[in-house]
Structures are given as C-alpha cells and as structure tokens.
Image (cartoon, rainbow, N blue to C red):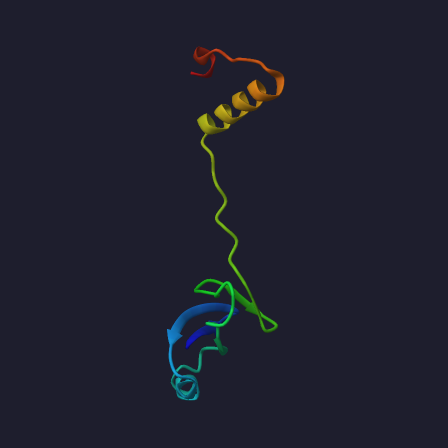
Length: 93
C-alpha cells in the first residue's frame, strides 16, 4: 500500500508500507500532520500535491515564459491566420 506523508498541507513523501506500520511511523515521524493511503485514488496524489479537508489537489503547472522572439512569432502567425496577411520573413528578423 502507498501512503502520502503530509506536512504543512502538502505531500512531503510517499511511502510503501503495510497498514499496521503507520502508527509506528507516526511515532517516529511526529512532524507529519497526517499519513493517508493514496494507492486507491485516481489520479494518485504525489509529492507536492496539497492536502486540505480530506482532499488532494495537484500542483499548478509552472507558467510558460516566452521569449520576445516567440511572442513576435505567435503574433505574426495569428495575423496571418486571421487576416490572411503574409508578413515577409525579413520583417520578423
């Protein structure tokens, strides 16, 4: 069985153990707020997920940061597709 070890509202670790081991684990790892079985959940929560009010939430993905060149290329492509305008390649350089 897999168990999520919760600290400060987040999964800090996921361990494989038998259910009868969990009370002993809590004795030696008192900093964990909760130890919750997760192997029956779909999707299965993992390290970094938040835990609140008995439920789990996946972390938000990191935002994608585009370079100035990537932003320009996206704008040119949008203009070309929406307005039928073809921007000469040398203007984008």
